[in-house]
Length: 118
Image 1 (cartoon, one colour):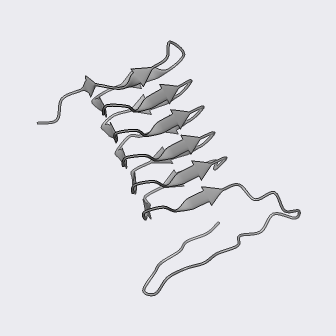
Image 2 (image 1 turned 90 degrees about the vertical axis):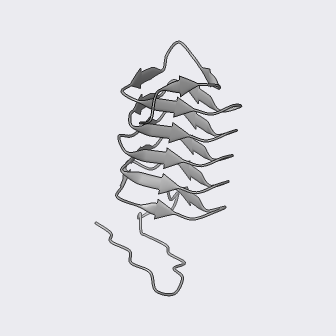
């Protein structure tokens, strides 16, 4: 059974709820983690909400975003995204809020993929 552990750094403004695992070198700043959640080695979570049911692999950066029921693979960056749910994000992927007006989705999608947009 998974048990909470913290080998990283969590600032006083952050909230940890439920079973939360934070690996060595990970940093959580002004964020809420709702377990079950695993934050990988060297990951950085800033001004965000992660979980429940989320796994953030090593060296990821999540900022100003909400992620739940999702897996974010290593060295990926999520910035300024209101909500990511029920998703798998691959390695070294960058997902960020568009600065274009009017806002539109710009996609590069690999073979055999499924994308649902609202």
